[in-house]
Length: 412
Image: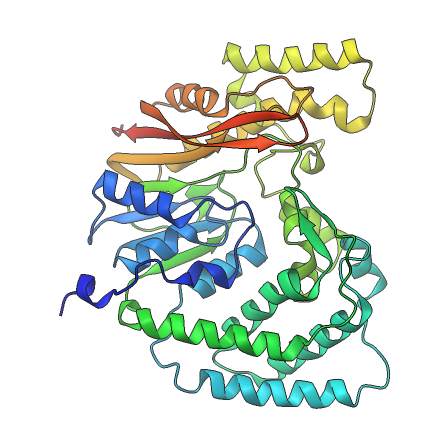
């Protein structure tokens, strides 16, 4: 029987194990897999893979894929989501044993469990209430103590529930604290239910477990130093946009609770691997702007932002960085395009999903158009900019376009 006949529901909710609120949708990846004619034998790379939407969609279709992700918690999520263990017979049974042990510990817990003082400084105040936090920490330790071969799935289920079932977080689009707090919740049963969902998903696609999905924790601006041994035929990705969204905050709570980030030094190390898309991850040693110094449109945009800041008499430290972020962002993407050549096959085709912005004093940033200039400057052919959707930006009270920039790399 062919793989195509085995897939009864290609849109089954594998993506719902864990994903960003604003991650690009599976149907868009499906659309470009079809448009590009991607098939078995091709290799697809997502250099900003996030929680693995592109990689999961490729794996469903028997297509080899590679993902690069700088954020360790989302890299872990992508890797786990693409590991469809064929033998899941004991998965739920082992989860039940862990759930029983955790429930007993919770029932007999005399004192609540807390994060350390340093860990507390890394997360938003009131991100999670005392009881759910204590129970989540007890469940986490029970999962780790079991040394199960399903540990990755178990921790990922916990990560999802920490954010969407146990915490006080809200997303709109930046992460914040909801007025309606969750003071008590059935932590263990909710986690166990998520394991059941995962098990059903994996069983549906277990026949594709031999299809490689290689996920790498790394910086998309340093691709030549990463362990990618084969040439890539296609890129389908959605990098960050230049705005004031701190992408590390979106996953901070689960990163801390699961031990991916435990100190300010670790957080800084993670953020330094990100494209400089906002003022909260700009550092004195940053020099990516040098890669777009010869692109007049980006220089002019940066100057107009700085002139608007002066005219409005805005003097905060972050506001003074707005003009720099624009150059650092597009410079970082230029460096990315340079590095990407080391792994691209001749005539590779690329799709970049990016959104326009107006975060910096409402001066429009036409991201796809500027990124097209950057790519062309690095030797890529621009095949077109295709509209994807419009987004309403509450901060600036404007509708902004999201587009797909289509590029081709002929080769050198």
